[in-house]
Image (cartoon, rainbow, N blue to C red; front, side, top):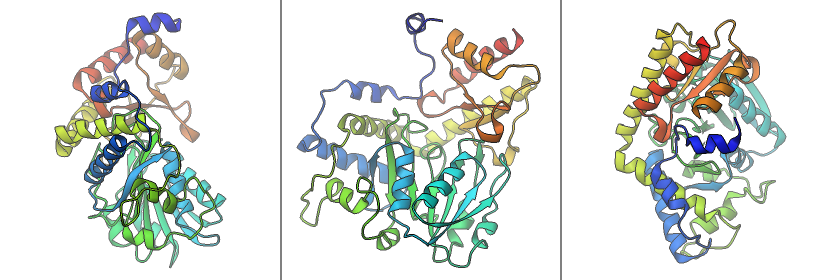
Length: 362
């Protein structure tokens, strides 16, 4: 279908909150405009509430979740330090790759894709790692990894958590769970377009930041002088912050907090489980065992005789619905169906199930 015709049909379900779209068309503010700096301060306060933390260094990094990942690692490790990384999907692999590129001695603890990590195996992998890194909600497989035991038993290591698909979609208690570093993305459960990486670092992590990270752009000591200022509140220019995106994040966080975090978690849970039940009622198999399934990201096995790309293309062109394909060893074997942010609504679940059933039957 031509792009113009698709546009005339109207968009499919969007995970972006309407408040964010309204904020995006407001006049652009300069990155040093006092009005914008006030919005930035409020955005950081709202992020602390959503992250469930009092960490002063909690702010949106100017870049996607991958920038947050790299910022966490480049500021926290020196060449030769040991980083234990849990790998049960693509994004654990990425953390291991980034840590390796920055000179860490990476100990990769691997688990089958579609299965949760064993936190005890991570703790026992090395007697004194600098960092233990794990993905909370593995986007490539739809698995949730338990963090509570790991946070209580990490020892002297910093606990680094990828919360890209979990933040605002399920409970994530940075302070209570002993998480030292975490990064997320705006395009998942936060319901904001991609381009920023919400980030938080504990005082314990700050004490261990390296003096001169290999990345100037991601040097958090320099960035902090802009986002938070010095003891007098004076801000030092570091880079041109994407002000419109920050304003959009401010609006999205406002919508989330107005709904209430617990209510948002319950909505994601209800709609995600309804989607999974509907897929199983269609006779489809789900990759992940029920106790370890994410609600906001479901991996469903592609039925025999059904073409992966043809099905996803048809859903997009006929119904303006997009679902993801598998990655890594799951490529061509599963579909990844997100139910996040503003799109986590029962009407969207029912529409997707009907469209998918019709498409498979054709």
